[in-house]
Image 1: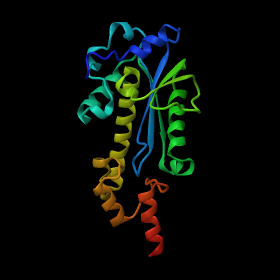
Image 2: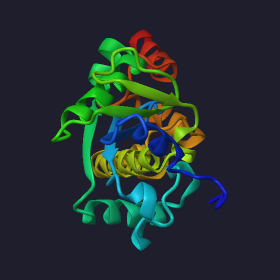
Image 3: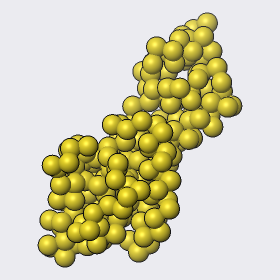
Length: 218
């Protein structure tokens, strides 16, 4: 992690405007061909902006920059900190196919925010602005690398989704979901061609749609 980067800078700026209860919001699973999209909203204690992260969370960062082992450790540490409030939104493949992945992602974010009690006053969102978000927001490109609140949400979303995909692997071992988590790897595409799609595949995504069209012609 870049020690020179102040990853509480955005939180601190919002505190000066009396916006204290801030929720970092991020998602995992927009790109895969199978499984849900998962979003998380995380509210870290306001005092951490001045005191810093506790020892158990010192490695907190964008989930994509961490190993699976470290993500799992941070996930456990986030759950252990009783002062952290968070929510998780899970939107399944069947809904993704009905409303499209962008709208499903936004729905997952609103679901996660709705679980916060008390509710957040403002959201720090990774990436682009979300037009349908239920509360005021600040969109931060690469926010999971710039804000500890968003980084916490990225860990919660990623680990939750990975665990879901490992459960799906038990039911459908022929696709090796535990390895690629539903992304369109060469091995996953080969399994699709060999076995067709299963009920958690996103039928509106081109590679899955192509396989189904081929099956329909046979």
